Length: 271
Ligand SMILES: [Fe+2]
Picture 1 (cartoon, rainbow, N blue to C red):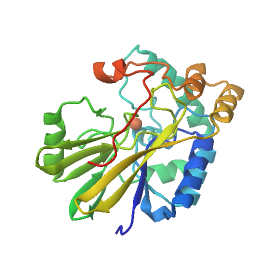
Picture 2: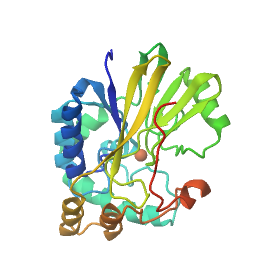
Picture 3: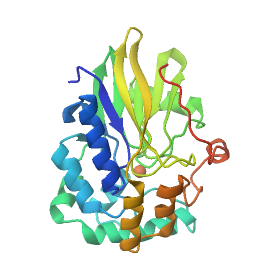
């Protein structure tokens, strides 16, 4: 199914400028669309839900169903992120969700409805499973600090050597016992709460030791994305997040990731 390097990315989040920049980056790297995989949430906080869906579909990359697509396709009342009732995340999400819902055409919703929840393949002799949140739960937040026992159980239930997840928004690659790996490419629609405006993608490549991940920053025209959000009267918190690299709410973050707020991420390449 896949021969050369694979480009992985999460959460375009209706951020058209970042998605365009990633497409240019894939071309620069010589990675064809059928070797690019998005872990879902094509639509969320940003100003251009419809144009971002159109770009992703026109580009022709693999897309895994995110909770945002699932909720929109099912005409649900909220994004299904799993935010706690009354939390800042919940109230911020109501705003963009209603905007996206009123903006997307039926063809896009039908496309979302047909997205696969998972993608399984063999790469460098290892069983890889791509999903959105967790194996049992599409909106499971899995971070670097999430317990290794939990991750190993998920890998076991999934019968996978490697799980590539999305949803939680902060990139990491974690090696576990018996050469199992949990990987998250981060998102291209919002910075990683690290005080920089860059967004993140990753590459999966074959090496002498098997499948190898590397994380990469991507600069894009964040001012334009933020300006477009303001022009559409979307929540100021996410426009500012694009400009400052800090999330408007830390509700979903565990203690460790919360503590790293504003610290520029330095991700070690390859395991
Ligand atoms: Fe999500």
